[in-house]
Length: 69
Image (tube, rainbow, N blue to C red):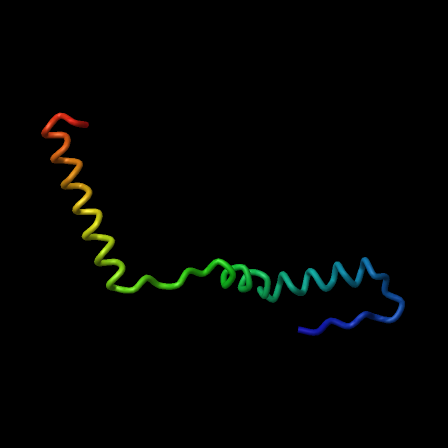
């Protein structure tokens, strides 16, 4: 995107016009989305995580039955 300063235009007016153009174009919004984008988790990691959660649930349930928790 290119914005040129008009003849006799003040810096503040030019800056205001530039910022308005950037917001309208959606460049800033797209950059923020990309900045915080997470990588997709692999199937193996998802599976291992699910197995770990199930194991922990069983341990906690066993402790409750024994009266430890």
